[in-house]
Length: 347
Image 1 (cartoon, rainbow, N blue to C red):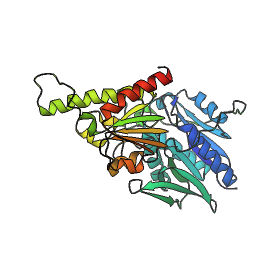
Image 2: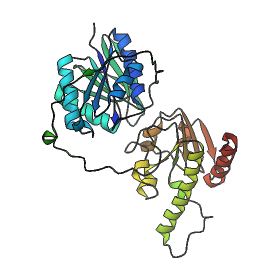
Image 3: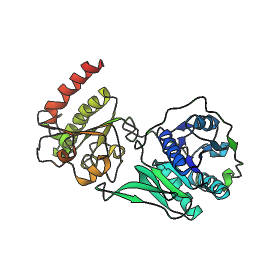
Image 4: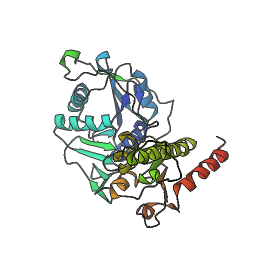
């Protein structure tokens, strides 16, 4: 029988990342194809509930490393624990979500285990007893099929690229307790605090994203306050424009995104950037407002299920990717669209 398929269950202080059950579903699919079983790995403090929930989502066994010293995620102790478990149990595959923590942990474990990582994978299949992964390359213009020739094969899965399975509460089990030998003094990094990121709902988790670009600042009909210079007027108009973007996102229950041009111009914080150097997203609906469609931006959102573009320039590259395109001034289009949706959705 092929080695087991493992899934690292990512969480923040006991709150499971939404994508992890998608990863469990992908893991179950691989385990079935390989004729193997599915194992969950949970590391943290007071996280037994996560381990028990993993059985509902298909795990045949779960390793649980639970200790107060692991309350805050830090790469060194988490990687040490996952790597030690892997060396002792020889899994064939370890899956991680492509989150900030998941990417870091996969890379650190790869070093410890002398293997490689297949990052940001959007599809999985098996071939001759090993995993063949599909991932975007060249800014998403090409899909490459790749495999790791060493064991275990470490793979990070792009958020919202796999189907979340239905939980089965009748599936229960007892987690295997893992002895935690690490102590606080041996960990080189310390967490001194947390700060809430600006910008509202998470881009990577959102079903709907409404993004704005440089065009958001191009509304000469807005009268700025007196005493502003040219650049200050531009930013003031952009801020007013993003309020309009936020209104549409709010009605749709979505998140606000932005192009790199809008971020670089100071219109909106970096945390909202979608693109090759920002967030890579896969929402069900992506609405691009005043975004021309530079290749760097397209790399971050081209896998969205449905793309709608609103732009005054009928030749803008974004229209080549969009399923629906509206040519016109976004200030003439978004307010009535928002109001119509508000009435239709009863908000």
